[in-house]
Amino acid sequence: GAGVSQSPSNKVTEKGKDVELRCDPISGHTALYWYRQRLGQGLEFLIYFQGNSAPDKSGLPSDRFSAERTGESVSTLTIQRTQQEDSAVYLCASSLLGEYTEAFFGQGTRLTVV
Amino acid sequence: GQQLNQSPQSMFIQEGEDVSMNCTSSSIFNTWLWYKQDPGEGPVLLIALYKAGELTSNGRLTAQFGITRKDSFLNISASIPSDVGIYFCAGQTNQGGKLIFGQGTELSVKP
Image (cartoon, chains in turn blue, brown):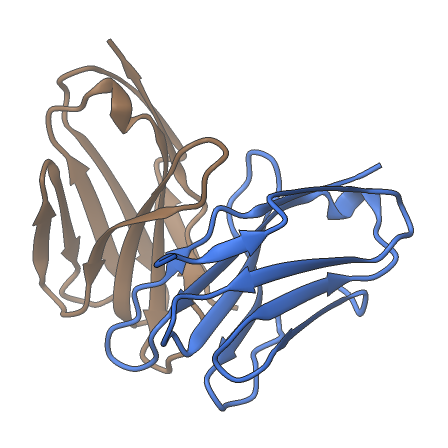
């Protein structure tokens, strides 16, 4: 498809398990973002991949969170040893780098830790 | 760190009324974006602004990039029930880097 695709759309996991969330950006978009949105809250920045430059990981809340991206393709966000406070919608967005940086979002992955 | 202050936090208006919301920053921004989020969906881009003083319209929506480059507003004219949702501003500083989001404005429209 032409938009940002995220999978799974919903994930229920037991506390302590690891989860992987996937994001397929728009083709050609060199920038990719992950955000977390708790129920009724705003968008909390997690990590930003900016082409060949080092990613901005300043928003990752703990060392249980990590993300990878190979080239300009798919990104995975991994949460290890999940906790109940990790329950949220995880949103991915992609954009071009440079002058015009309109970011387009996927539908998100709703993570529930039980 | 960098922050965007978005106001108001929520609005309750009558159908047909005009709406205005704004964002301010302590930093100079090169880009201002306005998004709308419906329940259970990802944010959808409404308007993008790239030049100080720029005024851009998209149907009943109008947004402006402040002259100081530290603020932006979004106006919605003649509101309708489907305007209900949460509106977010986002910006990128002149140092580049990540998009920073405001806290959101929740809009309710009474028919």
